[in-house]
Image (tube, rainbow over all chains, first blue to last red; front, side):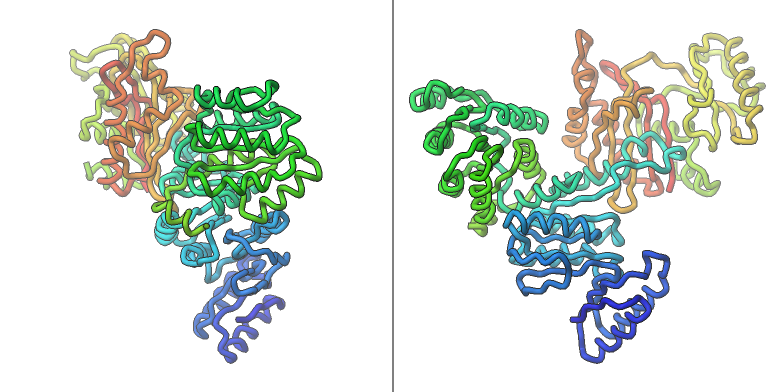
Length: 386
Length: 227
């Protein structure tokens, strides 16, 4: 394989040289092709490479990073192994979430920036990721597609096997209104794209933060068994934000069950607010969380448990870790307002595959995004993860 | 039916409203009775049994949103009022003849007001066809209470689309009003599903508004846009 970073006019020559040395692939970082109107130069380059049997990524791209082969022909250097495979038309957007994954120590399996897509496009990568054992979640930043039939076919078949998270800009449809029906202007291409995603079980994200959060959670969690959520918190304020977001999303914040209510009253101090959300109050320590989580796991019918650590609480990581695999419930953590202890605990959680988010609303939205998935054979996936 | 489509295609235009209505009618969708006229004298030749009130609408391939430019006059209660309305509309459009080629006029039975909804389908060149149901009337673009589903849809999906509307409460019977016939809406969606299956030339179809009643549904206006 050859990585080419020379002025546009000299790229073809390098391709021919690479062909003589039997190279099979070329990553062309160089710009100055289709994107500035030089279609002919790009076509010529593509034809030359085709004849020599060389596949192209780019030109005008930011290259690729594939952790399994320890190949980093891009920037920035992301050297943290994870389960998220990123393919991005925009180098910046892809690099931004790859960098976040590195900073949080959850890592990536691959980062590919496609640029002009003269040859290899996102569909090729989605197809590759569907078989790549190091990739559990496929994150796609896309602006437009070339081959609709292939796009829909590969996307729908891959979405049955692995979570796909798409960030596709263009929600605001400014043009072509005057010559169109109301249907077109109120139900424009963007809404069609949303319902396309819904139909095939693809997670759609609307901004870079969602793109990262949804990629992260779907690389770690299966779709919850149902929409009942129980919230445990030490912060009433964070708890109520979680409830609001959950209700907006359509999750069910059910009142606390009678038996659970009894159990919690018997085992928690008086200042705790026994309800959903369960407020352990600001003086809560890890022992109090342990009791609460154990009771909720045992007596609550909830399918999802969000544990919010709203104060500097030590050993939060161990608590979540010890309960994560022993339950069919989806357990997600949120750590907020915990100072230096928060940093230590969150780092341990992230490094060990525990889904943790910095705000209650991000945690809830991430959980909710999992309901878009239609992956068959969920148990197998869970097994594979452990 | 294919004649309508192939004629419009040949003339490089979308369907006229009366052609859209004709097509819907062939698919057993209720539409108001209507008559297409090309000149003033044809009003005098209308049969005596025409039932007032009627609505007068302009027919032009250049005008997509008729009511935005004075192309719809409602509440016409008599022959004299109809002549009056014709003269006004004809004069108005004669003045702006440069902008719009007038094919003729549609005299349509004015059906009783019902709850206004919009239904349609759209084809996205990258993703395929989708069906739509929404809360209609003049505020349709303001509230954007619409639900989409990818083509093709089943009867269950059609019903689910209706139930997913925010304005479903209106269909269920809001604040003392009687419930409206949601099955008829599902029928309409399935009919649109069938139409876009049968006629691949269609890019967009829009029934806006249709009136929904306790036991009935009438498509009051329709647009069919070809590829």
